[in-house]
Image (tube, rainbow, N blue to C red):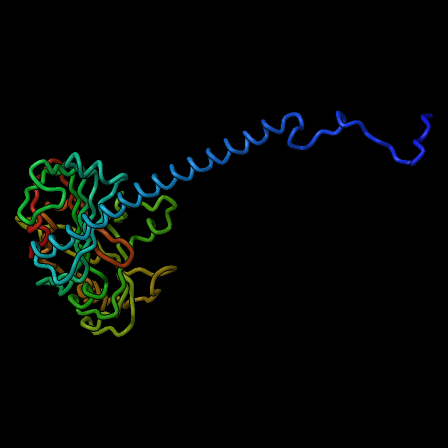
Length: 299
């Protein structure tokens, strides 16, 4: 054991005292902190640039949609701005190459000479803007790779036309209960066996009944929708009301009618008709057509 100094204090040699600043690796730690701060700063700048670019793209798309809605309203004589969606991201490259991938147009509550009110829809794919501005002008002719157009009549207006004010339209029960939907890509049921439920007072029958109705399109210009009732329905999902045999023909006649003047947006010929929700929909699909915005409304 080493003897203690006379004053009782132990003196540590200076060479054994190492400050934190002089500790091995301290310089490297400080350098790592500075590099980390630099990387964080660069990441923040990059994120800000990305957010700014995305915001600018969305802003440009919103402005283009607003201008197209205003132009369509004016060209088609609509009472208010329709809903317009220019799909696909990013938007700015589409505008720069004068080619929109997909555009959706929707107008509800449009005046209709036959049924009073209807909704119009169109989905346009691969729109060539080579001869038009990316802010589409009213008179622009637009070549379209594929066009889908629809006229939609809700149960209320169908019922008023038929004289059945409480009418409810539903897709065929076999399709409603089908896990796959049993409908077209745009959500439209088949045209056979739609379920119409209402009170056919014109048939001198004051009970709510359900009948099966088939839809078809006839006429030289394919614009007349024919509704043909084929039988009374009972059981689950219906009014479950029996109809006396002597009243059945009159009840079926009350649910049968013809609706002329069903002209689709852009004058497309109908390719299918059915139900979606509680609406009747007539749809037309065509490829390789050229349209103008004033053709959106046809009646």
